[in-house]
Length: 319
Image 1 (cartoon, rainbow, N blue to C red):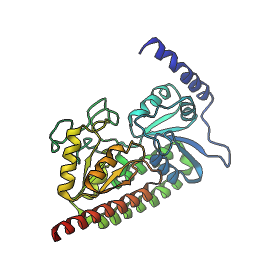
Image 2: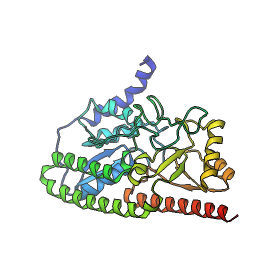
Image 3: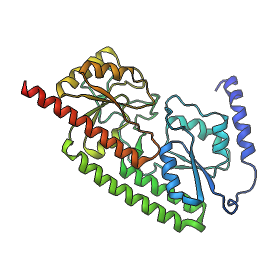
């Protein structure tokens, strides 16, 4: 680390030290424990389990991309004032975890126990000219430092594990209300299990199908539902002309009419692709806070995409 980078960290460290002073204590009557989460969907799960005794807030604002977000002094101060910091090991969280390691905030990896998949495992995600050669992100690329997909919450089985990890952390933090946290967690996990059954039934007719996305954030959802994703973006960079040409060729062959674009990314490439195939661009957000509502919306728009694809294929067959 250079001298100037060290100087840049001094305000954050000072804020941390100021917030870390004092004895551990429960909040006053009517107040709630403060908890920080790296991402909006994790904060949502944390608040569902915490109920009236926990207030969880996401460091990443909803609608922002974690790939170009750098936590500022305010973010560090808020995280340092929390009792817990809930991480899924997204790369941007490391700039928070380093200063928090010196304070009293307990860092909880809520993705503990989840088996991660290679980034791009369900997509044709490549850096070479062969559009059929799969590629997983490697260390140092924007969304993954270890080549594994960090978007773990988009599998409902994983979301249940995350909820259980949060409940354990809350019960250790606040044993007096452990029964409340367990009850809230049980209610939430039943809801997520029922939602998985609903989603699987809705998408069962399209099992083995492929949906086209800008950024390959939906690998866990694809695994859960038996679908595949094809990505336009290449390792956090715009697609090469050769890769885009391969995607267009495959999309036309499969009758694809819908390209899904996350609101956090530049949709220019997706628009160009949708125009090339005579289709449309539809939003699909992996980071929306209300996870159950977002999974339902993802299911709805995917059904729309597959229906449009089927309609195009049938129209071609009638010609």
